Length: 250
Image (tube, rainbow, N blue to C red; front, side):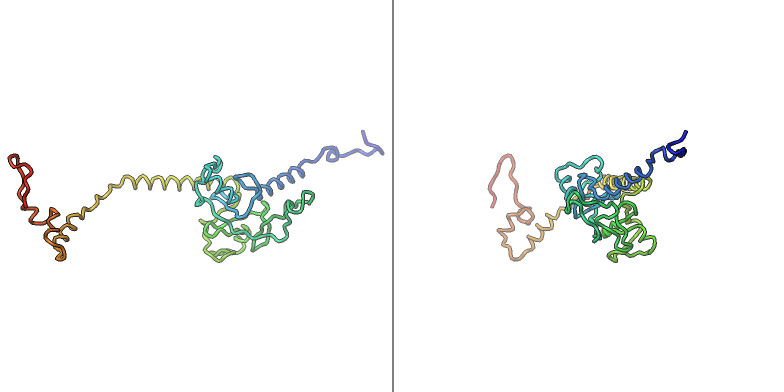
């Protein structure tokens, strides 16, 4: 059987293609993740911070959640501001915010607010990005691979492999980050327990030394010194007994 004109349609012409639309949806969803605070689920606002798992947050949202004790279970590892690092991001001058231009403006997912200061690739979720926990500088992973250095490409500070965190890492690396956090937490807990078990040294009683120094002070009168039991007169003073109860000795 054929269509009009006697042509026979191919299978690919009869079946709708879904792969392209699915890929597009995934790209848009991925790009949105890089613009969204993972705590409030609102649009990211400067200043922006990241945690040890490579997630992005608006600093204001983190502070508010900590103060109100409303940190969700997904971010339970964030106990204070020491658990996040404020990022040094490079602005993308070509980015046009659709919110400021109106809702009818086309939102290009490839153009994002920030880019790599070395390679100029945009931080849209397609290209992997990393940041330095020491200084907070954000660069593309491509920049670190092309130019191997122990100096930060952005600020010139120290750049060590153990301080590098991948933003929104793949699942296998994310699991490694979680394991590292658990090990660090267990180590701190053990150190705290060992500290509690250590015997406390008794405080040195220096009252005797202060009293002896008082008795040796030539500026003090004997009457004043006699007020303290460390003087010789006080030591040799007769004590009352059951017959002469509370006698007055002068």
